[in-house]
Image (cartoon, rainbow over all chains, first blue to last red; front, side):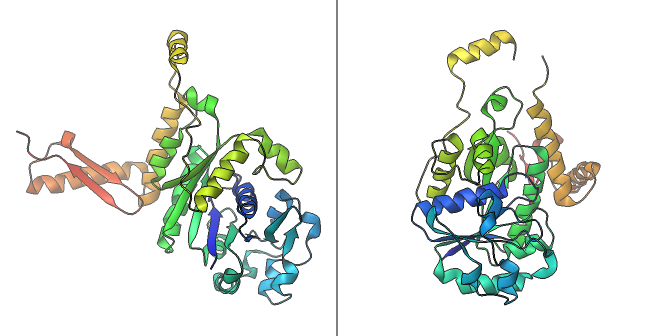
Length: 263
Length: 69
């Protein structure tokens, strides 16, 4: 029986869709039959991030309204045989589906996949309610900024109130240089403030932008962010993988240098 | 020597989360804390410096250290 995981954040632009794509691909590369579902009605993007935008025929709303069968709407990715995408609709609005319909769809497809990843839209309105309906677990994506952390806290409260107990944090776009000079919150700061388990940390990495430009993933490639996503996937699979301290404590020399430069 | 911006960010986010969680204005949390202190002090001997109210997503924690020897 598959596990339904919703990827959410509250705030937009923190990396939900990129995270959904990379974790989905990482799990598929690990041999798990995985489906990624875009629930952002009217603003679909997961297909673009994955480079599959030209292959869409039917979408989530077609499946739910009975306009097509699930198999007709699913897009297989030639590069990853275990991966399936169910794209969102670009022309419908949030009210085109209901949480009950989402729950029913997920119950129907749960047996066919090992992992079902739901890419949640930004905000806490109808789209959010649709996305979390039927999820057993969540990944809350945030960046080390006041606004993103604030929204993450609100989202975690709503997830807990809706009965989703397993909520884990993914901190995206950490910049080691800024953390070191005291201009960005550390992983420990963010984790302590939000008080939920940490699933992983993704460093701010140009490779994400470059890969996304080309409709490709970073997971499975030789990059800091790719390796970080791979470790996250292994944690999701139940392996015990350490979260490396990417903001490694300063060595003796650096500390002396800072002392003299007055920082 | 300038203040690292993280210190300001942390202070802001911590205050923001408390007002969000209680859905109140910033000053309200201090009033709440003071009222709880007054209420407790009717029943037990506590000093302000050993008393703390912490607000999480689902709980309000009241922390105090009792009589000291």
